[in-house]
Amino acid sequence: MVFPSDFKGRAIIVSDMACGEPIEIIDGREQLIFPDNGILLYQGEIETEYVNHKYYFLDKNGVKTEIPKRDLYMYWDSEPKKPDSTITGVWLGGMGSKHINHPKPETEFSYMFLTVSSKKNRNEYFDFHYLKRFENETDSLVQNCNKEIIN
Image 1 (cartoon, rainbow, N blue to C red):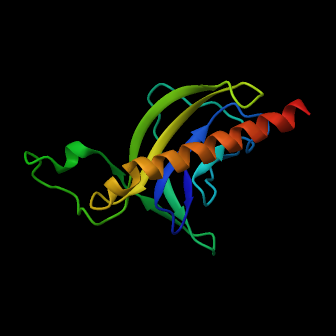
Image 2 (cartoon, one colour; image 1 turned 180 degrees about the horizontal axis):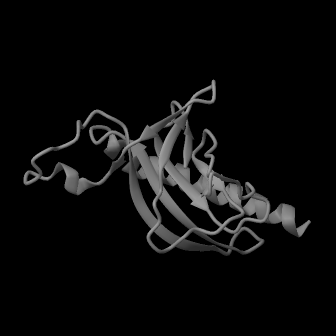
């Protein structure tokens, strides 16, 4: 998964979108390239079993920098080597599905979401208003994509 070099925030992959980004495989790995808004409409499927995801920032010169994986257990008091809480990492959020019945056309989609942030700033991306704006933008893009297919 590849993010713009300055990306921070919630990111979502919406799968099985006919008008989404095509499946691209390089060196045997799917390349999921996120746009600046963090909302990737993707023609491929989201794997539900163990998947060895790798995360990168991509700068304007095409150079990739790996982003470390993060999880809350890494910061427990019992952990002998806690990561630096100011360094940006990728936090896997989960998977789900959603059904929108208004406005028409009815839309159903599956997704996986992540957060790209440091531990120190992570809570910014769980703010109710931030999440509502992100959800509304995602829903709008998905519905517009589906309208393109219908027309």
